[in-house]
Image 1 (cartoon, rainbow over the protein chains, first blue to last red):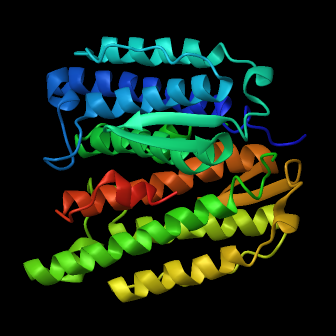
Image 2 (image 1 turned 90 degrees about the horizontal axis):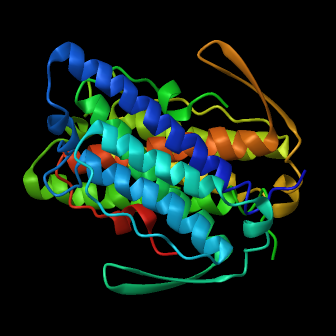
Length: 168
Length: 168
């Protein structure tokens, strides 16, 4: 077996997107038991100038869809950022899982030298496929997934590291 | 160019270990200006049953050293978890950077099928090299690096996503 761009991306994204979904199921049980509104958790932030939970999940999902699409040379679909409930967050994750699953190894393998251009905050960034995945996409993806977990933990949702990593 | 086990591990770990060091330099300027004791930040937690900042950094560093050593089939050095200051945290990061930098591509490339056994929390875990890196080590490493960042942000240290990702 030899590590490939597909193996380093699609299955890693799917693992964490599915774990995030499972965390929201635990969050749902938690707020039902504690009689807390979903919106309290969805708007929770670790600092006033950090994104709230909803946005953390949206961005994590967007890194999964954007990275796989760009590595495959496919169009990046645009999803409206309108989620206002746990159910809608889980739909966003499910939609992203379906999109990411649509790529086969042959679509993404060999993309190490592909030219990737993206615009973030008005700034154009240019990468080759390999550093884009290893040094930009994966750290960003895990950053937002972890911060979503950290927000749920800070709100008291009973999660552990096993929920983050999942069954491998 | 073809993605390899070395490229997916060593340079990714080094990027983030160096970024963590730079974040602690900003944290140092912050506490000096605000007259806060280092220990307040080092003991800060996002939830009572999550690890404090010091431990988050120790574990992130340990994933970098343990993963590279195991993929290379080398012994994993044991570092005492005794850091009590920003200076000592930065020393731990620097020591880890030196260790990780000691591996060359030839030491780690081809480790996709290597048998990896480790014991975490008294539980033995067995992996092949590729899933160990992609599905266990990298998510764990980024988890603890992100949570360290999140704690610094929650404490008010003026950091942004660019500090986490660094210059690529």
